[in-house]
Length: 254
Image (cartoon, rainbow, N blue to C red):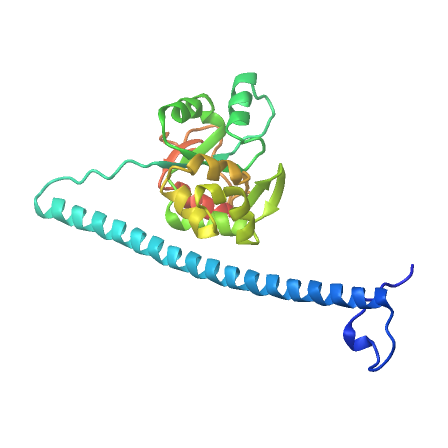
């Protein structure tokens, strides 16, 4: 295969007679090189601006998380000093993990697990706490365990096990451009934007949750408890609602 060379003005000896076609090629190549250089400079500035914007957004999110935590601590202290009980705010986010395979699985739970995108053993998804989701979880209680993830759990899952769905393909979240290309219309341009929208269950939660491919977790270190019993039963088990203790399980599976 013949090699192709780019003709530049420096390649032509000084004072040599240059054919008209070669002159046209030289002018075209110079214009293309200049255009390419300008486009690269513009892209570099845009990338730098976007990185700075994402950094400022991250700092704003950190302040928001810290402010919320301080507010809860102040309310707990206030209730304790007044001799009252503080009712913790209701959870808005669930993390659901499938703990049973496909053997002896009846059609109805199989369909519900498919709707929840829990098609494989040890798959995990984020879900919003609402009546339809809770009713669906009741139908598949013996096959899943779930609870309320903390910010650290959400962040660890997205950074360590996060994959996006782009054109029905499983793509690793190695660049913010992948997120911006799919969720830019919802003003989600980076990983921290995605984490904030998931953790706070924002208006674009559905799109963010569908963009994230179901998390493929490992078997937990130390194994599960008895899978045939519920977690809240007296003898202890694996399936059902773990509330805040789901974070310890996900830590062993991540």
